[in-house]
Image (cartoon, rainbow, N blue to C red; front, side, top):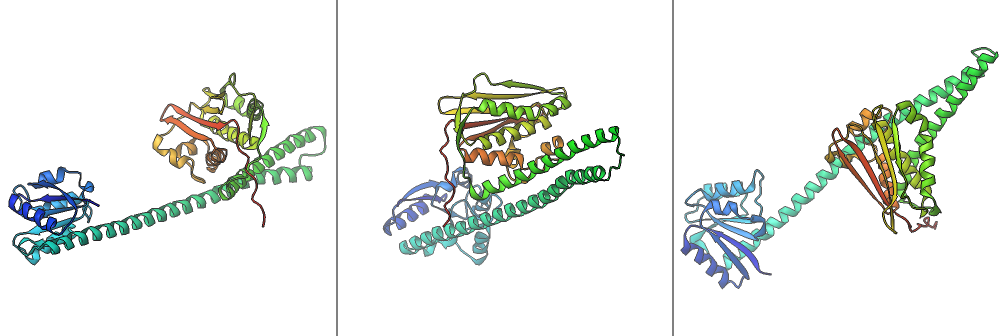
Length: 390
């Protein structure tokens, strides 16, 4: 392999000596030479296999230049050997402190010695770089684990609250009906009937919440399996829309639906598609202030794909926050504002389902203009078989 070497020295004779010594050692290399520190700093240093820099330079001390090249870190962007005409321990200490991989005195150079020093400096830099990368990877993994731990702790706390509220209502209304606390006349029984409906709705809320958590956990652990069938996605869409009719009326929203170009049939997991539509529409309704609109689109992209999108006219968010949006158990500030009862599993569930179905999930958002979530799914998804028990 041909090494790409950089020689930083204002003396042409010294540069020539370095080249001759390395050539005499049978080292395969190509050379780039500069005569001042400013030129050294202007170069793309990571592209070089090693740089040899003299201490005494016309525009700036070479060691100071090395310090600048490190850009606030303790290591240079490529292996660096500092050279000096008159070496001393103080200069050597300065060089190593600035990040040099080795230090040489020009008068003591020999072809084999220079070659050996050069190879050792390159090997040392790459070994230390690997250790730095491993350390950074470990630190990032630790930060991710800590963030996930905090997120799950908050999730458990929020989940406990979300379960407690409807269960408290269920128990309270049930005890009231059981004890006939409002009497036993016609008016009382009309109230009991109303409370029974509240019990049913609260129970459905609990079931939906638990089912969502179980589905997300199942997908994250098993990554499937899917149960693909042929169905009309337009029918599924309107079933989902019907479940939100009361909520849309109560929120005084204008729900616009564009399904004129919807595919007649698709072959995929209908339950997963329904969950995707439900969670995206639920989030859009909760994010949209009263009097505004939510737009839903279901259309055929081509013979292989279909598209489902939901646009809200809420507060939107910064695009850089999107990566957090689909992580399980985490909630974005906009989610917290628009959905005080949410626990942060809706969009992660959508993301996981879309991934399992072989589709794509994208967001178009900006503060003050709302958010559009778009899902592109294959019209025909290959069915996954359940894992075989051994």
